[in-house]
Image 1: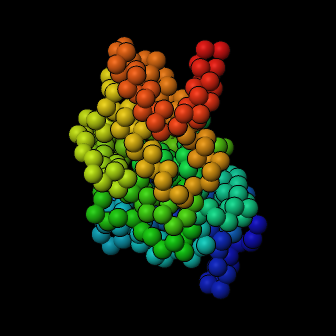
Image 2 (image 1 turned 180 degrees about the horizontal axis):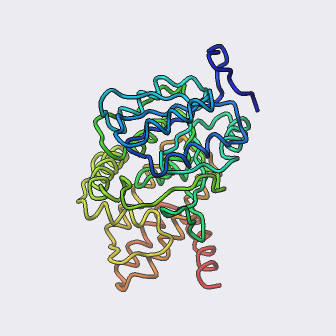
Image 3 (image 1 turned 90 degrees about the vertical axis):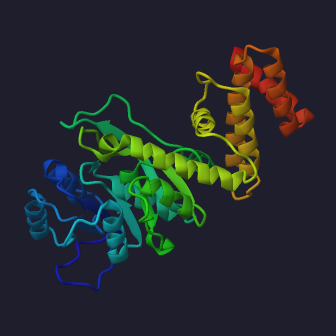
Length: 348
């Protein structure tokens, strides 16, 4: 698992660089740093970028740096914002892998060890997340953990519409040499994963290895509307890349986004949205960069989802139009086999 790097010894290159940017994060910072300090995997450096904090953050960082030579504090002379601060850390990182953690979140003790172990066995994967627990300000956990899509094809499909990774769980290959888009105030990670996954494969461990703190002052709560607007713009751009000749409204795209990650029909679902979703998937699978087994699982899930839409439509005309589109996509024998399996799973 490696050893502690001796203070002042720059010859030992760490396996992992853990990266955190913090601005006035004193209330939760000790717990966040403690969770990295206590990892079972010890071959890491921990870069903490202090974005010109004015609270007790500098004192907390100084105390930790004096205790552990792997902890390296970088203080910005003026407030640069999260995106530029993270990029500053990426450029200074020495580890083969960069692991992200926000200053109010916690990594479970075996997080780094589990991720490095998985990546050693999966050399095609250059972007790896994990499942997560949600917790409140006091550290109380939700009853059930959350997990994202697990394999590369499913991750890339979800990435068209939503972020398939918990940011504080992600570990990615430094040699991919990508940084966050500094024109974006929010959604930096959502945009970055799209670029990374054009050059490498992604995966998620189902095991929850991080705890994500939900509190009133978190960025996703204070700037929720702005985040959603930026995310929708990224979704539009990605879907135009798949269907460059089609046009849709924000409302239609929101509907397609919701449908793409829902196993059951959603309120207000329209025939146009279901047909658009099917068309996007057809173009998506033609990219030819996914393992056939993964793509088969994804296709089966989508067909089962659209079959439920067929059953849910009140109009026979809508039922037959969507059913016909599915049939043309699958082909005659393929449609019969799929229909047999769909009916069995629906009614039994």
